[in-house]
Length: 562
Image 1 (cartoon, helix red, strand yellow):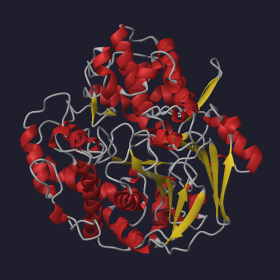
Image 2 (spheres, helix red, strand yellow):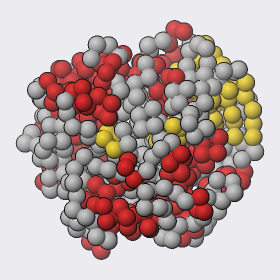
Image 3 (cartoon, rainbow, N blue to C red):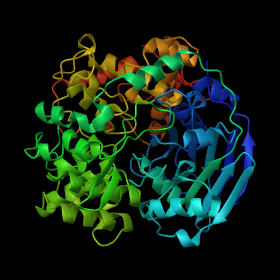
Image 4 (cartoon, rainbow, N blue to C red):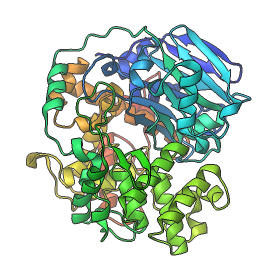
């Protein structure tokens, strides 16, 4: 099986020391990316670690496809215990960092302990340098990136950093890379902030050689020539469809359609797009550099989830206002989904839906923990009672779009995903809109046969996240091609994916997670029976726990029955 290569670089921030460890067995068994990050975290992070304490460890990893030049592979993975969900969580980001990361020669990087002052940590194939950066206290993403370019001659594609939100331990703070791309979900930026790391840079010329099959060029050519609407509108292209089928959360989830959708849909985003945008080596180019001359605003996005969270969910119907929210979150370093939903909860509590100026003001206050922002920085799960609103989160993670009350398989996916309410864990919504061929589609109503299909998609997506291959490669990186690219049968890959999901769940079980956490803020017909079916498919107990018998002697799990 094709996998990432290189030693683990373990960085002790407390003592400012480094060590290299051979982790070839982990790389060979778990491919790279999320799989390797999960396995290392499962075995090396104490089950009772405080997410914001020195015992939590943050892992940065890539996969074997980052040694290729194939489209859909400009991605990185980050894994740690989440300050937002309190469980083990992986987040991945696009952009241009991944190939500079592999150029250092390391297969994975681990950060543990905590520095006694704000640091930049510079990793290269020549070693690691710790640089105190007191002048970057409170700096925005663009200011931090500019500093790296000025002082180290390293452009944005070499950097991963946090904004003020991460420094202030906002529980949904992002790690920003390539300036506008985010390890967004779960608050891993707060983990870096708690460790007093403002900036990481990666540089070198020591990438290991991994031979990638020629099928990579077929994928690349098709990505370049396909006339896909995402090339014009990104994920915002699904906005009208979501609204049409009543799956667009509106006014803090109190409605599922937005009467102002025409002001924030994919057409409006496309009107503001002024050039092509992409990730490293990708010819699909679905990113969204946007500009509004009148407002003097330039950003990248918004993607659909930001259109939902800061648009329909806040009842804001002007795309420029949503662009402003997007830019603020990028600069301050926050997940646009969690930030937007939290702002929507506040607007609901104040009867201020549609007030874009107030939304922008609250975003600033959250990032700096000023006034009401200090409470809101804790996220919906911890503040909803105080606001007097419903708790629209699963396992502490705020909801994206693709409303599960309509797309009910996606609703089940939100409930059971180890990350919490996350749409990318299985992208089940694609089957239910549908965004796939008719023979792959499923009726959005009902749960019936969906648990088994969900298990297969979760396993498959765990492999993509380990490869690492973008989820938008759907239709380009087919099952056969993925097997060829990774040098293993598709069934064997699914078994690896199943083990990754088991390890995530087992870690979270040790922290107290069980069936009670696999719940939704709304009722779905047949939900409890579907949950039972899902657990049986996984080989877990009726309480949603991974039996010890599924775990091997080194913490690994037996292959699941897919």
